[in-house]
Image (cartoon, rainbow over all chains, first blue to last red; front, side, top):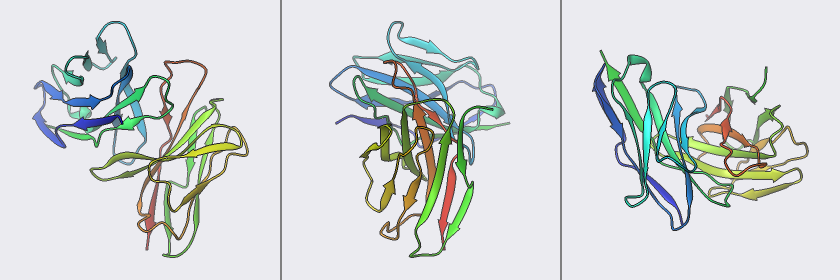
Length: 113
Length: 114
């Protein structure tokens, strides 16, 4: 069965520092990979997704993630974070042919001034 | 204004009472989902439906029930059999028309059992 591991439950960083949020998954078939962001007491918003093609995907607000099939990873990175990036980030995986998304337990990113 | 509506945003109930959470969408999506979110646990799938009048259990369906009488609506009932119902509940939708479609989410309902 597929599963998703987010290796860090909390990541504190200073403003303008780089950040990496780690995500590993387990699956024996082809997968689609997603990162969602959640601000307090709100629903989830899609940040970026890997479906096929280029293994490096980018969002409009400076985040990027790289699909690494050999390491079964999909880590999220940003070279310089802002206070407004403070939120909880969820990695999710969907196997090809499945309608179900499997989520990691989330990483709380706190950006300090 | 399109999207997914969940109501109410905050809900309180006494122990032993059933309560129904609303989820309505005007995105014309075929699939709808209910998730439960607890601190540090991520999202866990309760029920999902890919078509009207049909639904499947997710990973934690015990103590919950759903119906899908209309494409736009997928209400979730939290029954008194659910041992620990206090949580944040999220409704999601997805179009099933293509392989690459992502899920969209509503704003959530926070249920507190007193």
